[in-house]
Length: 94
Image (tube, rainbow, N blue to C red):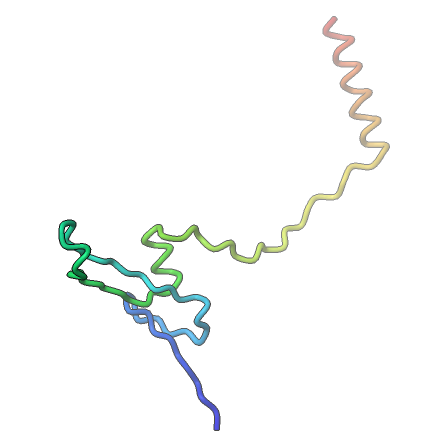
C-alpha cells in the first residue's frame, strides 16, 4: 500500500509533492495587557515558496545557473600583438 501526500498552497492553490518548498506563515494577535492570560488569536497558513518570495519573506531562490559558453581565451601571439600595439600607440602620443 502506497501513501501519497500532496501539499496545497493556501494562498495560490499550487500543488506540490515536496514539503521542503512549503512554509508555515502565521500572525498572532494578542492584547498587550492580557498577554499573561492567553487571550490571543493565531492565524496560520501553508504557503509555497513562490508566495513566500512574493511577500519578501524569503530571498529569491538561486535557480540552477544556465551553462554559459565563455569566449576562447586569447592566444599568446594575440596578447603579444596587443601589447605591441599599446606600446606603439603610447610612443606615438609622446
